[in-house]
Amino acid sequence: MIDHISLQVADPAASAAFYDRVLAPLGSTRLLDFGQVIGWGTTQPRFWIGPVTTEGAAREAHIAFAAADRAAVHAFFDAAVGGGAEVLHEPRVWPEYHPSYYGAFVRDPDGNNVEAVCHRPG
Image 1 (cartoon, rainbow, N blue to C red):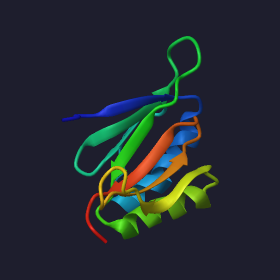
Image 2: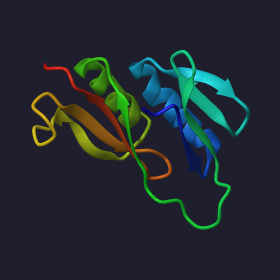
Image 3: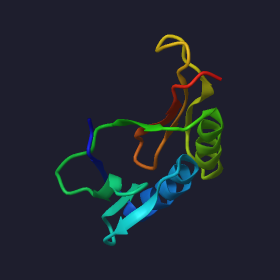
């Protein structure tokens, strides 16, 4: 359903380093780089960041990236925490969403709630 998504970020270099680190375990790489505007994906950029271009503070967004398996959720989490990200929720099953929902949540450099999720059973 979603073709691509883009976030405005306060510090494109810091955010790029964060997303390079946490998206690699999920199979995504930096595909396009226009300096302060950068896109990641597998075959084409689906996730973008760029500098803040509007007035006022950005509001928190929630982004959930698909993980192939639970090991990838852990690798995402370890990469984020290893880079200093704030932990919101460690990897675990979230049965209130559905019995196989396995996710981990961290904050990116701009305070966004970033998740890796696997929907496959254990």
